[in-house]
Length: 244
Image (cartoon, rainbow, N blue to C red; front, side, top):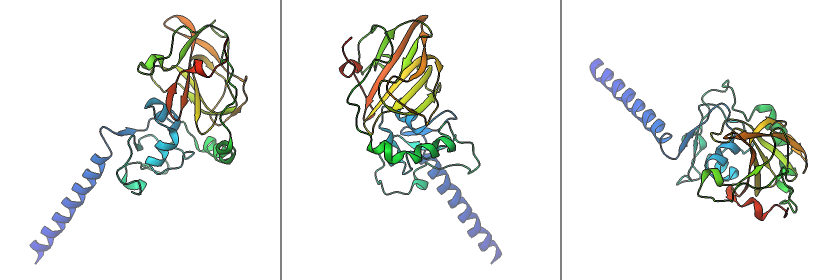
């Protein structure tokens, strides 16, 4: 009987390993993203042109929940939205893992104001983020023109264009340099790139006109790259900003 028993045990172990490997493979490749240290749900959604709440829903996690390096997230809608998050690949490796930039403390402050954020109306009035003339026009198909570049002087003030909450402040998105993303409502986000210095942190509430950064440069030209996203998609900022 012993050889048969050993054989059955070996079959069960091989089956378990194969099942585990299949589960791992399902959460890799196209349609999946592995979280890095500086990431937040908002920065990942921004990078892929997704709506942040949509990204959270696809992975069945709370929008204000901290994410962790090594965690794998869906970037496409699952076939069965009711599938538990633990089987979608959006799994925290260890409870002790260091959270990504969306830290526990900043997450708590965001959660404490989640009802206020949800109730905040879309901005009825926008202001210019800095003083200067646009250097280009909006073109959604071009990564570097999904907003406008505004000419100016190195170190000049960069302002929040409307009331909101800072949901990203870092330099983890390639091509954006020092970047700040502000959530103004459930619909609108704004972003301020190529900054010389970031003056606000994630979780901070800001008023329109608040100095959030200083202007930096790109390709040896002092300028601010400014974007507005509506439901995760880039829109032409000049259609929202007042005429100069």
